[in-house]
View 1: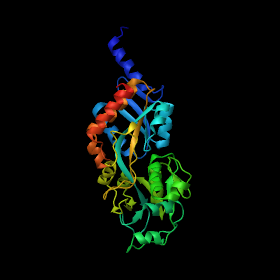
View 2: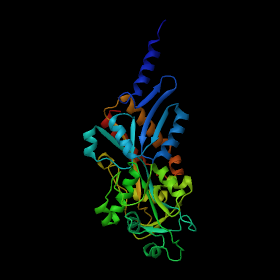
View 3: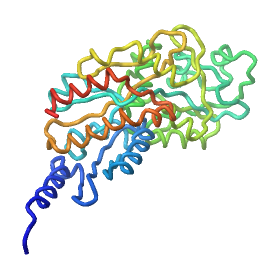
View 4: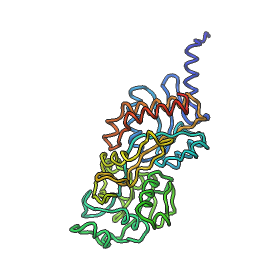
Length: 346
């Protein structure tokens, strides 16, 4: 049988894209490239939209596992996925030590959601210190004087508060806890900020999905989730008092106002934190998701990953905005492209 060397070479190149140490991605020379990523549940709604449109347009498939930022970090370090996603940026020294790079995807935010009979979405007002005291187990009733003071005229139910938090390693938890550490010295001292915490009280749900499901099922409960889950599941959410003392609702503008206080373009390895910034419209619990790639992965794999995210940056803005993810400005995308070239040679 005569072998077409050119066709064979193309097939071999396609198969080479498959492996991040052999297991991170799978490909077929005939069905297009298939990549696997894992991590942040926060960014899952956006990656799902992008990957569906990307496959339709290019024939290339991106399988994303919504397992939490901690899992995404662990898997990219182990080389079992083509990319990991985390809502907690890794510090530059850790990236260097592990042979990794990271870049931002889109700006978003998270909010408190409740299961409170008689309270309409957006009717309840909360502040950072009050939320910290709820999660510290100090405020136990919905009609507590501290909550009532923020909500004059609102009939608060005499119900016990059930705290719901993440049970898995979570960048959503990091963002939430980082915010609480900035507004509550007691929280900072006793709990701190990380992807996994020793929670003072409450029940744990896996992923944003798990927290949302618990809150929907448990009367009197409160939890924190990424805003896209609030929109998609029509959850009862709170307004928040921001750093300027203004009562604000979660919104794309509020997330973008928070991002306006940092400069992704100048930060080493894009390491920035978006919580508790000033500004009358700024949403206090804003954040971002970072995609993490390994320098040890085959160049062909990293090329395919960066192609996908560049496609999202350039073609997925309306999809991002439809679920209140703030697209990155062109100037930041240009810096990311230079960063890829410098660190990955692509």
